Image 1 (spheres, rainbow, N blue to C red):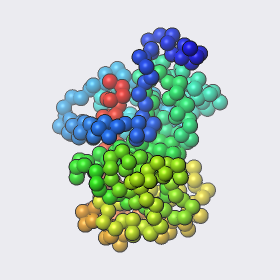
Image 2 (image 1 turned 45 degrees about the horizontal axis):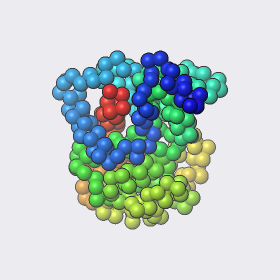
Image 3 (image 1 turned 90 degrees about the horizontal axis):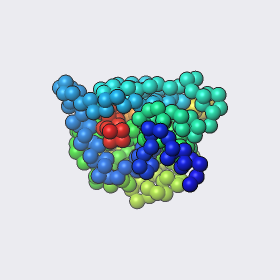
Length: 317
């Protein structure tokens, strides 16, 4: 038995039969599990609006480690765990020895003995994987540079509550082949829909991730062609957190990839526009589209909480 395995076996009060269940990428779930979570999120949203008690995680503590700041991620997880009867513990690098160079595995060994689950929002995906490998409790990826599974789970929920199954539909991703694009690729394979990714040359998704989704995902150069007949048109900022120094170069590269009313006109008449937010009106999307009748961005923002509540129930209950 390895020293790490022995420590797990001997951990007082935190011994688990087998390894804990983590949510680091969307395909850590099966397609049936995704559908179950979406159905549960519908119910949890209804309970919240009608005042039905749904405190199913009483006394559960969610440690929330933020190496990248966020509005929606912090509020949705903290409010969500509270509504489920638990408590969210906000931890920044300044609150942890991570900020002084402690190995992430050592932090995981300590923190995960004291809480019931951990959500991490960080930079390199290897960091959340390293934490999960040493954790006694479920770990949720709140965002890494490679994947943003909670947001895509939310987007799937937003579609589901308004239109039903996404199987056989068409999604147009316009812009950078980033962590959101990677998570959409995973979703397309898992749930069986067509994904068209309109990306400028040099800004395509990771080749390995794209290869894994080749049966359902296609990279295109023409954003209007990608949007043609699409059920969902979605995008993200041109320069994500940590890419601010590239803003001018990215603005030039992505100038032709703005989602405006002409591009939306190429999609189906009842197509939905999605954006993970924050949005920059006049850059990746016009105000006319973002604030228009096809936009569901504010429902998406709220739905982060409901989708993640369903996820936390599944992992922490």
